[in-house]
Length: 171
Image (cartoon, rainbow, N blue to C red; front, side, top):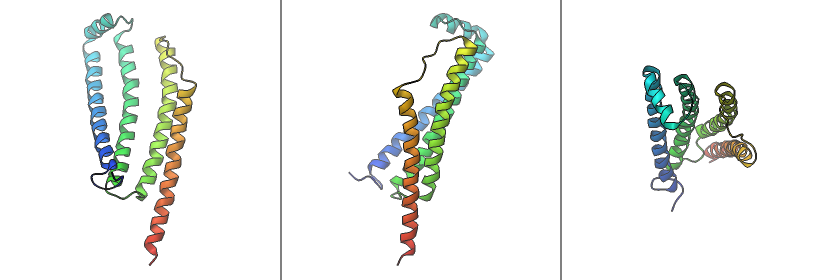
């Protein structure tokens, strides 16, 4: 099976990314409805906490949902940029110059999300007195190596775009 062009692995992966994008978007919409419901019907918040057996009031629940929603927005943007990269791959245009910036933005967003993860864990522990499992060891290393790999890919795409532009000038 081919990697580039219509009917290739790239086009299948783009379809999968489309599905993930719309699923995350739907999850964000459901999260907004949940936040609005918790804010407008405080009695519902009490029922939810009674079922889950967590001692937390509505404002704490809303804070947790907002923290989660902000992270989801970050992932939604990353998936959007990945869809754009895979769209160019499915079209057969590997070293599209815009992919360099997209990959750099994906790397930056992944790094920001990792830092946000550390900060939100600290915030939840401090404000809500909820124990949160610390992030260290191989999970932290894997996250930061992933960020570096995306930046390396961006540089590879940059060099490929430069070589393509140079080849277009050659007769």
